[in-house]
Length: 276
Length: 317
Image (cartoon, rainbow over all chains, first blue to last red):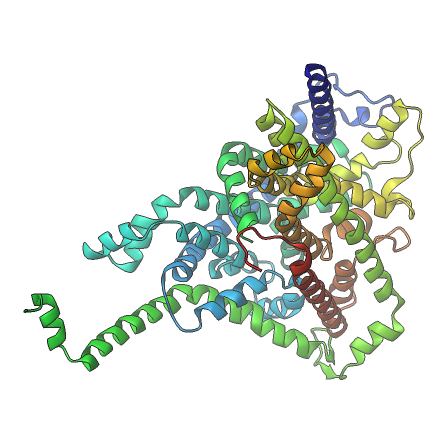
């Protein structure tokens, strides 16, 4: 019995370690390349630990190349979008969670079904609309839509709001709090984990968005990191060490947010997965 | 016997007035509802419903964005079905990718979740590691994989070389480009795994205890308890996986440009080429509607068939 158990757990852990290696080695590969001298990149046999370790690659990538500018653009777009999403989605989700009205169920179903709509169906008219507005080569087409809600996040927040008992709101109402006051002072403080989740999800989506910037930003000075990396990759003489350094920096915030917010993150995914 | 004061007072208010007060409260609530959801509602009209209608109208025209559109009826749809081999090619590429990447992703992520569920210690650490690749996405990941797939000096062929195997040309080989992208998609199965783990946690231990009493072996328990109890999760992962895979775009644009020899000409990439490289907005819009109908039909099939194979606890038949 004990021997069988031992064998079983040995197999389990052997597989888990093997799986972890498969997951981690690409990251190691990226990091290793990003710290190499240009001439070392194509050296055979591959040196996993570069010598010397060239930290200066990161400085060069973000000062000598336009990656610094692209990083700034990406930060501006991402932060504005997160702000817009949080503002609009909380208000809409509150409406769906707490207020009765004719047509509410129908609208809710309509909203959920928009999640299934492929983006390409609306892509061309929306592109034309933004062109008519003169918004080409501005950040508006990437930021403004966020202020009009997002079906998935509204759904997620509504799930959270529905789980909050109504007693506190009723007490606040008797004390004369306004509807928006109740949302801001009673509901939102209780849903901080959900708001963090939405912010992290939105961060990942916008930070890595490719199609949007590709459609609306054609001037290299306005590029986001995603566009910049793609642009830089298309050059004839690809400098993999700088490209990998840029990739590391692009991935880093997502990874940091994941490690910090892991608890909320996993819980929220669980919630959506279960009640989908 | 006299009634309590409040009820007397209530009785004193005529029914009609009470109704009006209630109506007013309801109306006020409805006004608040529409006010609160107005950002989404406006966004829906301006960015979804309006463009959908416009997109359908555009699909009936020949239009290059600059000169006036010309009405052509259903010619664009006809062209796709009867005259355009690339339409069928791109459809095939996309379906092949979905048929391999989605089920393989489900199987591997379930296997990971089952393994992780067995772990006595270190579960959090392994979970963190397995989920890491799912956190990063986009161009940086694609560029990383281009470097991994590099035939001369990439990670894959380097590791294969340690075992004396000469690896293929991966994304540069027409026969290997599609399998390469499927392999790459399997790197990020951590997202599916998290959902499986939640599903596994939701299975009551009493079911396994009952199975133990019946003398079931590990495989029988898996088939008889785990799989049926996980069907809602399978269902969710399957629908989301298919919808996502059918809309693959970045890999084709960034990594392969649809090649080599159109072996990775994904539908959305072909659509994008038509719209923003050939400026055939009418044809591209028709293509978008084909994709929409396909996704709608597939979703409906999965949803309808789910009655037969998805088991919901607490549901009465």
